[in-house]
Amino acid sequence: MRRVPLDKVRAGAILARTIMTIDGKVLLAAGMEITEEYKRKLQANGITEIYIEDEISKDIHVPEVVREEIVNEAKQMVKAMMTKPSVKTSIDGRKVMEIVDKIISSILANKDIIANLCDIRSVDDYTFSHSVNVCILSLIIGIGLGYSRDKLRELGVGSILHDIGKVMVPKDILKKPYQLTSEEFEEIKKHTYYGYEILKNTSGISMTASYIALEHHERIDGSGYPYQLKAENIHKAARIVAVSDVYDALTSDRIYRKKLMPHEVIDYITSLGSHHFDQEVVDVFIRFIAYYPVGTAVILNTGEKGLVSKYNKKFPTRPTVRVVMGKDGKMLTKQKELDLAQNLEYRITDIWDI
Ligand SMILES: [Fe+2]
Image (cartoon, rainbow, N blue to C red; front, top):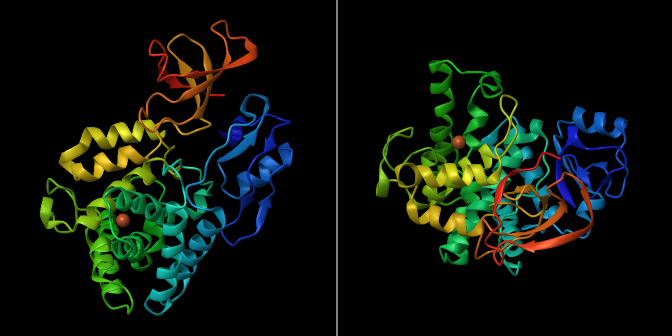
């Protein structure tokens, strides 16, 4: 299977993964042939990308780092908390902990933990999906840092609730699809201490979670908000969430901009490195994130084109590529699996827009 922008899906492609709404309903089931009508239905539901199975992507398996039903359950919980009239009474610390615990177990059940970015989400449900993804990515970093189960639980609860303060920010500002005025940006910034206040006063939620809400937009060099804290003065858990928050935001389609590819965002985060982020966190993060996720269509320096078919944990920029198109632009009758870690004369130069 491979991940394709909806507008690129050709007639006859088969849906490889069931698409659910955030409320747990099946929008389109795996195995269905994509028709123009289905494409319109998905578009109307804010879906911009899907997984398809076609001739060139047969037998390519995209691993899920967290089981899909757990991701859906977590999204529904976040949605319920963020849409109830009184957020203070809608957060059940025990329930959040239970779901976070399931996410931790699901991540740890992987033989190789690699965040492969396989969540299909609707642009309309951005905040809920984002909260869950930031939780998953932060936990992966926590695991990489050797955190105990208890410490992972605190990190997970805080990261899934990191933006909970947004419920107090006027909706028209949050949803504004274009440039914000400085007054509006000041309003948005307040979600950090709103979140801190909400979580500090909720039973069953640790202070670590409150600090994550308060400090996840602080930056190591003091250029963040709300208090321009620097380096060690920022809670370590908030420094972890700062990285996963930026990564997930930039790899997501938003109403006002197109998403970036994982390798572009990894380059961005590593180039800002120690100015904005905790260097130790960045180092762990890039060890566990797929530079070119399995199923990505790529162009090689030779002009040949193919799909990433296997990830190489030791050499993230050198996965195995299934070459499906020759230099001459003709589809190959016999595809070849090319391990870039073994064939150093080959390298990925670009993403193939197919
Ligand atoms: Fe935030």
